[in-house]
Length: 255
Image (cartoon, rainbow, N blue to C red):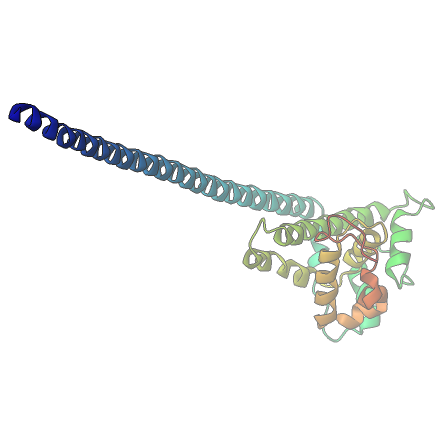
């Protein structure tokens, strides 16, 4: 009987031991599952971070290559208009320096007189110069083609600088680099042919509002401002910017 009692007494103990073993096993399995889940989550996060880092690096490389490409384009444009200047005896007249003792109302006539086949001395405005250079009357008159060549150079310089400003506004080239291109405006200054090209670019809305603002600020601050007032006064007025395309406004026209 004692044996039966011992056996019956040990059965609950054995069952309790089994229950403890099962609980320990469950706890261990649960811990392993939790650890595995944490490792999977960590791995997924690590992979996401790596992918994001690679994307950032790719964007940096792409932006750097884009900047290099656009800078190369700007140098190519500069070389093109320099070749135009060198290929024509009238080309570099656009950089001629007018003596300081010349009255500003004679500034334009002084520079235009350097072009072979000088126009009439009564050209007093950008509109008059444009009409004389491109008007159908006497289109093939001797010397007029020289004026069209100088106008072409002035226009090349103008749109070259417009591209520089647009690239800077878009963040393609640093603003510091833009400052290395803009001094070209000081070199040419208020040359009548440049003012003529600016007038046409403005009236046809070929130049952007951002660039027009830069032109206006530079001409207003130029020591030769009175030459602009005499030849193309409209560009010094605040409303001159109205209606031009704003590159910071998705190409919308700014009223």
